[in-house]
Length: 85
Image 1: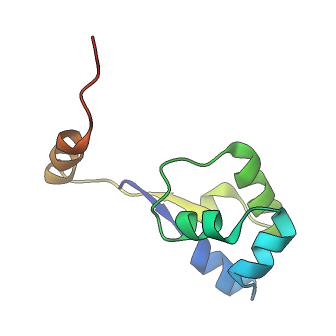
Image 2 (image 1 turned 90 degrees about the vertical axis):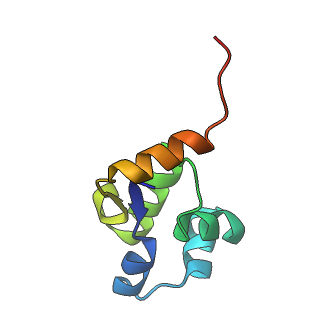
């Protein structure tokens, strides 16, 4: 995945647990865990805004773009379901 989630780093820097963040922003622990582990496929702007407000940070402190090499792109393309034309 080209987008890395650095939520763990921000939680550590703010000395906050995932459970505390979950309670502050009203997002389930399970959903935050999916985001934290990088398994999320999307994030709502409202969720990102709530996380940034609670952690007093910017979206770029939590999300990072990492350039992928060609083999990663080809593998991702092969994993996608074909779309109807």
